[in-house]
Image 1 (cartoon, rainbow, N blue to C red):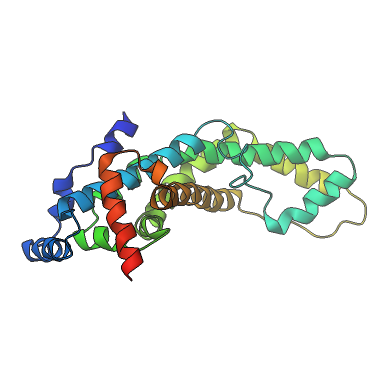
Image 2: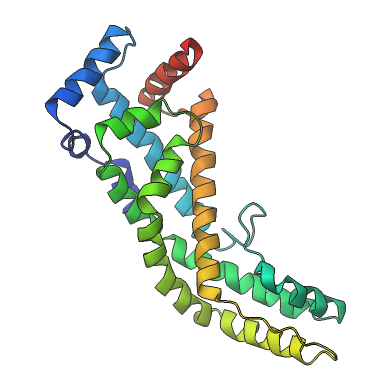
Length: 245
């Protein structure tokens, strides 16, 4: 249901946020370039690409091993606690280290499903000028727009879910156990204070945006990834503009 919703975002909502002058100016510019597309197609194509990008990212990351099984986005131990991990591995506590790592990633997988609705709302609020800027902005332009418009909202949504999930997947327990084991190692005097919820929230957001950008750039640069006539037409226009600039 959520995936279908993201693919049928109304063009009227996008155009409704612009003045008639802005719309006519953009239409006139496109027409004057003999581009073969109009403003409606440009906006619809961009929204289709965005929908494909974030729907794909959320679908992948919210499944089991979406984070944990992907080296690109897998969440490691917090940097300030790396010395704890290293010390535990040296004394044969590798399984305990792995439990902590897995539990952090499971919490991120659970929270990432919440990103879809936030992205949908962001695209609805996008102005016509945003749309054209993103279309012609090159690699990562759409992802950067989503970062600017959704990071704060996503963080607010992710935090309570991750906080709850850390407990549900025993991350908090595994973390406490690991720190206690470390503290029992002779001559240890360096303490660790890490806000796991903040750490996992930040890494989860980073992973979501990484996956969105990969899909966006695939559509921009790989003709085979433009799976509809509209995507082929709109991004073909963007390709032509890139060559003339």
